[in-house]
Amino acid sequence: MQESLDWLEHTSWAEAIRQSMWIYPALEIVHILGIVMLVGSAFLFDFLLLGFSKNLPTVSMSHYLLPWSRRGLILIIPSGLLLFITNAGALGFDPTFWLKMGLLAVAGLNALVFHRRFSGGQTHQTQLPAKSKVHALVSLMVWIAVISCGRLLAY
Image (cartoon, rainbow, N blue to C red; front, side):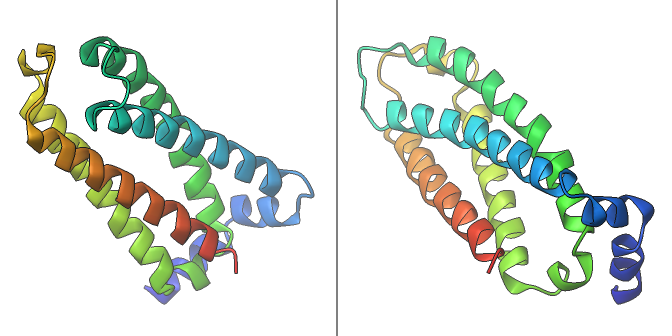
């Protein structure tokens, strides 16, 4: 694994990003903007599921917010991969990085299960089942943990 990480870190892309005065900061900005779009949308939807803003229709809000989450992913994934390759050797063995990756998997699985469980007519109800609140709480906690891990990686 160390050889693969070293190879990644010494690719022409990784070296160009590290040597440029503006590419790495630009990638960080794109990554953070994607996080804002994804997590901001998720938080708004989670708060809606928890009963805040009961006057807003759940289905309409999901149709509005979900595309913003997807757009955030379009920014996060490539920028995150490019940021990773610049320091692959260290990050590949960093427990905080792997905790963040594991938490991202939990967040994705939570969203997948939620959407499979409550799609197909059930989300048209004015009151979602109590289980939807569990998904919302898990989502909020996991995204806070993911962001915390991301910040800790900088230190």
